[in-house]
Image (tube, rainbow, N blue to C red; front, side, top):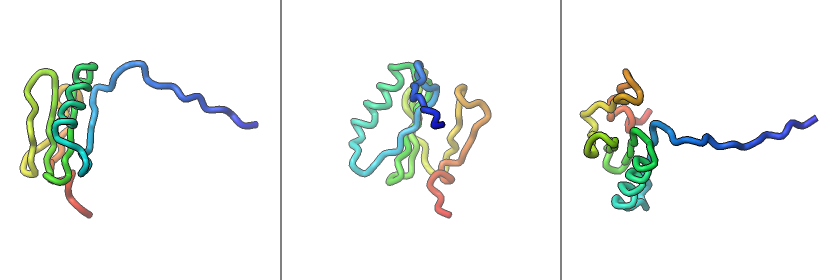
Length: 93
């Protein structure tokens, strides 16, 4: 007997959203998308740009911060204790 799966969506917004920028994305559009998430109630947005090897951190509490390979990404109040060297995001095995 086959059991049917029901697809349901979480009724709220996530605390964290992450976006990986593709080569065809325009910076203005990516920034607007991040702002849309914040306006919807997302507390923290990470925009990962592989071409520039940066992570831009958006939150409602402060201006966007651009982190480079020498910086450390943290989870702030959303993911307390989480840290990751930005260089590790772009490291190749």
